Image (cartoon, rainbow, N blue to C red; front, top):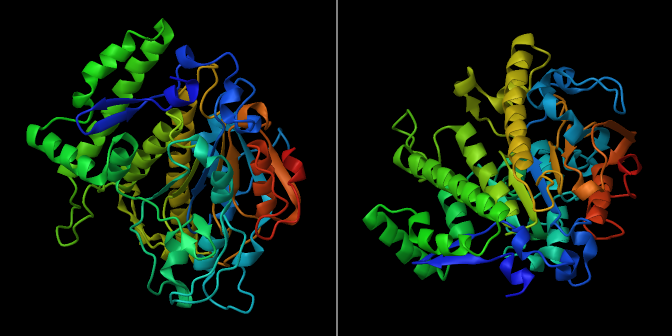
Length: 454
């Protein structure tokens, strides 16, 4: 079995297959040869380069967000506190803009445009009908060129339900607000929000009928996916070196823990208010939901199941309440704060909630190691941001954007990078595409590479 096959090896059991991490035992002398000439899709040591885009809704409390100074000597602000200890792992950006989110002649609908333009840099056609039109998103541009190297060309996640039609923000189709990734101008990549289905997608095998049968058999016997494959895992273990044996044991324990958490949410899937049942298999706790989906994303990268992902934590304009942190008011309602100190304080608390989720994701990516000894985060480039800055004014410039990870050493992190005023955010995308060997002259409204990134 060649390296490319082994790297995506599956332990096959009754209706189940387990994606495995990359083992040094299986690395060839020249790992980059597996990429069929696309050496830039990997690091210098042959490890996969991963790219992820994560969206936080409704802008930020700007007074708690904007950093002071620039370069490596800058000062973080209050909203950055949860991930301050990782400051050497990321860059903060200022002055990036999404011009196509601005009203123009289209009037209201800033939340729909913020969401739609975030990864595309394209203005959505204002329609609530079937004639939606946007543009291909950066993740899909990358997936089109390197997606065939992995089991899944890309992975799309969300904590919102699926909506591809209907009227949402000010006459815009819901498709614009509930989909972050777009395959073409008219086709969104539908994200998955159910943790169980993501788990089954990553670790299930065979046809839909075979997976359904396997799921029914597991339910009958109260056995987990991993119970079906442990004997095969033990056999594989004997073929691995000492370091890889330890890695396999650690990996299987981690997957087991995630599966346990998914099963727990299935047992306790109803919210406190019995009159509003939660979707099946979705945790009542929003934080647990976000973190489960982040764990799935980390697993997908760790096993090289995909190298491109997007995660819509929640759509722009969401009015989700945050009782778990003592904020019962809706997020969207608070975002129109009109400089009210009470609303600004609660908006800052919600921003901190999302910052804690980013800190969690960074830590999970740092904790997983590739065979070259570097972390998944080091061998990745992650963009975290929102399509609005000050939500009260619906500002689409000076966007709150963080880029984490060093792309296998191709990006220097640890700085506040100040771009020229009103630089298209799509310029950042062009630069990130270069890092993974995807060279395009333009995406959306880009005007060139982002010089401050290097």
